[in-house]
Image (tube, rainbow, N blue to C red; front, side, top):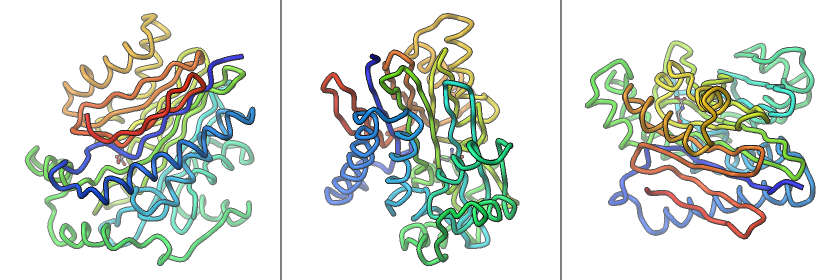
Amino acid sequence: MSKITISIHGGAGTILKADMTAELEAAYLEGLQLALNVGYAVLEEGGTATNAVKAAVVVLEDNILFNAGRGSVFTKKGVQEMDAAIMRGLDLEAGAVSGIRNIRNPVELAAEVMLNSNHVFLSGKGANDFAIKQGIKLEPDEYFYSQFRYDQWKALRDSDNYSLDHTHHHLEELMKDKKFGTVGAVACDDKGNIAAATSTGGMTNKKYGRIGDSPLIGSGTYANNKTCAISCTGHGEVFIKAVAAYDVSCLMEYKCMSLQEAMDYTVNKKLKSMEGEGGMIGVDAQGNYAMIFNSAGMYRGVRNNEGLNEVAIYG
Ligand code: ASP
């Protein structure tokens, strides 16, 4: 029997501690703990790592505070388009969706793609059609609305300041503004199988059908029993170019690094040198975990069957 472990994140690039009220901080920590508990319960009952990460991500998607599912950020056109992915380390099966709308739980659609479509990645209207055919739960636009995200978008919609290809100054403003609230989970079950899932509304004011790293297998999400399960959060464009999640797997597979060493290298050396702000969570098939970020904070948590049970926001 393997050590059972689950780790979750609710995004990096945290609002500054100075801007955080005690009430809001408590609400975030409570949301993280609930997701952790729900995912852990699946593992404790002998469930699979895949079902555990899915269950934890569903809880985070349903929580309006996080930028995934309900409470997703707005695009330039003022709508919410979401991306998600899930991957199973046992057999490298994976499912992903991008640019989807009105899907209550994008991670469930990603899992449906993995299990019941002969494909790995579906996008836009086609993905929505598949969701309807598979009986995935839909919600009206109002369900996803959050005043906080709407105000964030309103402050940006008439400018191009948000744009990622603009100066670093603007990017910093964007980070401070907490545009990165993606959610994710990684888990190791009692059979030593691991899995990863990530779900996001992407970046506020995104346009032209922009897709980040989150639903891209190997960039924002990856799982392989031989190495690790990884879910990323941060400046998606850089994570894509760094092939961040798979980079950790490669360092473990070809350079024999531990999970901790490999994640530390990718986040603090590789991504940092490319000005890729953010972080990632990971587990290996022995149930070891790591949560590493180069940003001010990362909403995160970890729980295992050796008594570890913690949630945190800042560094
Ligand atoms: N990585 C996500 C994206 O670029 C954003 C985030 O992590 O919050 O879409």
